[in-house]
Image (tube, rainbow, N blue to C red; front, side, top):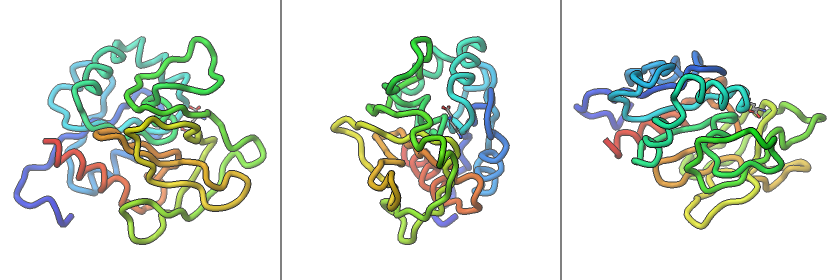
Amino acid sequence: MSSSGLLPPPLIGVLAVQGDVREHIRVLEGLGTRVEAVRRPRELDGIRGLVIPGGESTTMDKLVRALELFEPLRALIAAGLPVYGSCAGMIMLADRIADCRADQQTLGGLDITVRRNAFGRQVDSFEEDIDMLGLDTPVHAVFIRAPWVEDIGADVEVLARVAGGPAAGRIVAVRQGHLLATSFHPEVTGDTRVHELFVEMVRERS
Ligand code: GLN
């Protein structure tokens, strides 16, 4: 890591109620950060950033409430905690879900509308190299029953769109200030640049 300088490594939480928690922990530790798996409100103490992994957003939503993490997480997001959401994590950060079940809620914070399982049954899961703002070579993006971003507010920056096929042009990575989200799963590819971008956001904020 080029930018770590002499600063102590930041403590980054990974929401660990459901989904591909371990993969994110491995990538973050590989980048020299300290990592806390978050299952209880007190495990939020002292974190400087949070990753919400992919998984199943309806289940994650229920568990976050049952474990009394919903209100503390919303408060931290509102207070400016840097958060990176991947896939289901993007859904958890979205202010709005298109056509969702009436009982599904999100943490919110990102002024976007997401559509769950947006790429349809035929192309449920696929991989594609896509250009991402700020990276000089394409990212190999793995999509697993992924959402896309259907609509964005004025303060949301589009970082990546699908390049080809029927979904060409669909938005799959965004940033709004301290919040970063991707429809895809960089934690499974060995390419750590999206996580590096997030760690950089955490360091800037700390
Ligand atoms: N389809 C899942 C959902 O709606 C997201 C899939 C994923 O995170 N890989 O939550």
